[in-house]
Length: 400
Image (cartoon, rainbow, N blue to C red; front, side):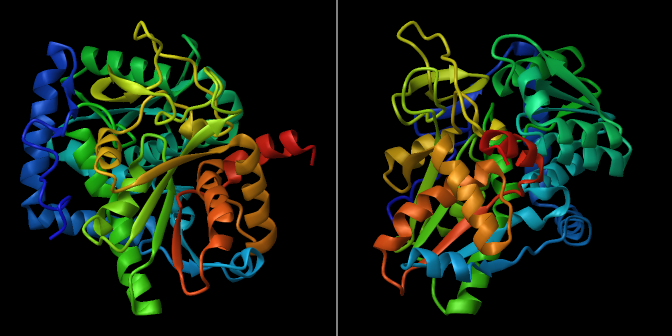
């Protein structure tokens, strides 16, 4: 067993080493404990797992393909590149995996109302989708800036019956949306479940969301063994809060031969207020329920962030990612807006696949790495979402 596998994380209090935990108002301690207890019971309940698997297959469209990107591989002239096609899921991204799990928990707890935050809108759409399917009232908080750059997803949420609340405080992006969702939860905690969208926040969310997303890596592992008769050499995924990356990485954590790279948003370059790469100059702090790496100034004030991709435009990273970095199990780098746009167009033109701008950050890193790797090297990119939501924004940027 590898040294990292021998360390059980998180512990009973939700700590990944010095990261994680539960830093919330007293009002939320009881619902978080209720959620933790219900999740623990659900994990031991075969009926819950049958329901979860049923909806993933019949409603969401799992398993998703592991697709050999033949033309991209040939163009780059190095490693053999596979795409884990989460973009083919119902609603267009990996977010639905987590939302299905959490709506089933909300139903078990007798909740009648769902709230969520969203940046790129994909989590909001997935939340609105499962709320509609189960007949729950749904409110989604979204930064006003994100509402403008992700207008298509705002319309989709409204069509699904959700109320979309534009948040006009602060930078008007994901951080402020989470603030408003938490305020709502404090006020309406008896009837309301908060479907948090990434592997972040107070315990048990980082653990729970990672486990709902690990289906990505479980499938990818089985699929690559079927196709290549061996494990991959490299896994690459974008990292905002980090659920799509953990979903791919987690089932391979104990396989020391498999390298892993998480790609953050380099924005306009690593300068204060111009990026969202928390491991590039970030420091330890507490934000929105958990302790992790944050972009903050010397006084502990959260810095402004920027990314062309709304889903990566956030000042903190999931606590398990911070722990994996400390353990040197995952390498973290960044891609700039410019390189993400170039990768977006390259995949579209070479493979006929329009990726989400978030996923394009992972593709950008592989464009750099693949030519330096041997042709017998196997790479899996988590194509975490499709780019329909980004087409208008990219068209404007590139004057198409």
